[in-house]
Amino acid sequence: MKDVTDLHREFDGKRLPPGQRETSRFPVLSKGETPSIPNDWTFDVWGAVDEELTLSFEQFKDLPTESQNQDFHCVTGWSRFDCRFRGVSFPTLAERAGVTDDAVHIMFHAHDGYTTNLPLADCMREEVLFTWALDGDPLPAEHGGPLRVVVPHKYAYKGAKWVSGVEFLTEPERGYWEKRGYSNTANPWEEERYA
Image (tube, rainbow, N blue to C red):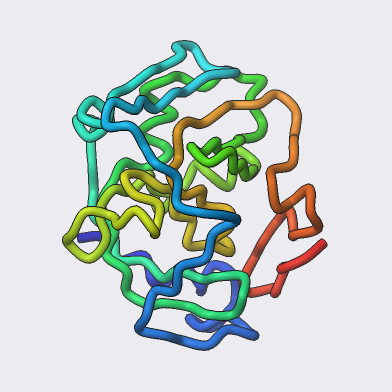
């Protein structure tokens, strides 16, 4: 298992970002109710890519996978250390689809209508995972199962729960919370919570 809990050093910060409190719990926070996900759902990749993809859950899990030990930082002020996630890294998926030269931004889409955005450069990191397992068990529905994105170098709203696809954009766009005043950059070590 790859341990990425020291990435705070890259951001010149302590492991617990300022304004955060450590918890062993995993509180459930979402914009609404947990959606009902069909068993035959698919994951789509489209936009500025060489090959648009539509993958079943089993096809998605057949991509090269890895396990990582990560920290998780919620914008509401709590952090959970040593979360063990298993999934597919963003660079692995990007390589499979082939990213065109004009791609600059990413929009994650979710089954409940949620969207969140990041610059492509912020996603092309091995620790950005599409994950289906937490601490050795299938990811619970209330935490985004069957599949969610985790981005340990950002506040967790940048990681879509119930993710249904990823769009490669040629121009930046803002997602659900970003349009409502949340930070577009979301760096926990700079306390970039709100715009």
